Image (cartoon, rainbow, N blue to C red):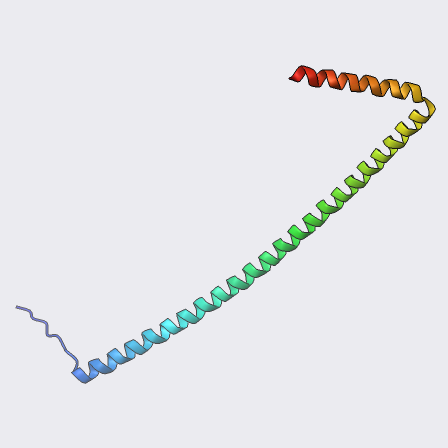
Length: 117
């Protein structure tokens, strides 16, 4: 019968080896935590830059939209003023015809509103 003998280290050797293992594990955990912290910090900085870039793009788009809106409002104001001047000029040249047109438009509007009821 073949028997194998097992060699058991002394109790003092076990304690020293276990202490070294704990020290190695602790150092590995610290190193891992440092690397994880560095990675998280880098990700945070990248996210901050991305948010700043996105904010800048949104601000630029909003400014462009505001400028387009101002131009459109200016164009509408100019067109309305031009139309008003044209109507005023027509009324001064043809006052009776203008009054008759206004009366006719008023009558049609009243009829349409009366029929809705």
